Length: 107
Image (cartoon, rainbow, N blue to C red; front, side, top):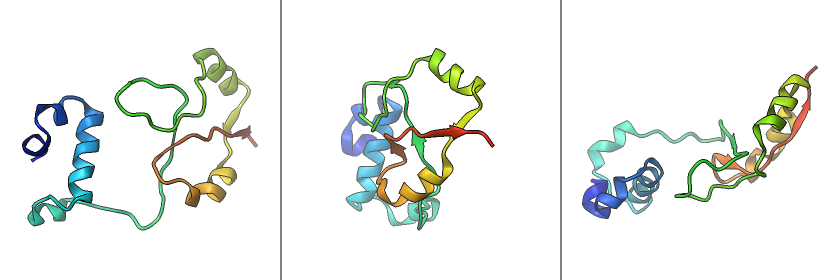
């Protein structure tokens, strides 16, 4: 169905497949019988903190480019995501990809 609507370009990359599929649903151009395979949650349950860009197809929010050495230092310094920060801000995020990167010391 995506290929019919967007051509081969619509399925040429995983990010394009995701975007084009999402467009079909938001434009209600999907067969009704396929809705039984879809699920939308009523509240946020996941966030992806993007610290480096690995593709150039979509421009998801990104915190800052962080090199592997810095991430390794955070790991050995026993840093972890500040869950309180993310829980307080979750309603402000409108995408699974967010531009926040907040760590706290492990307790």
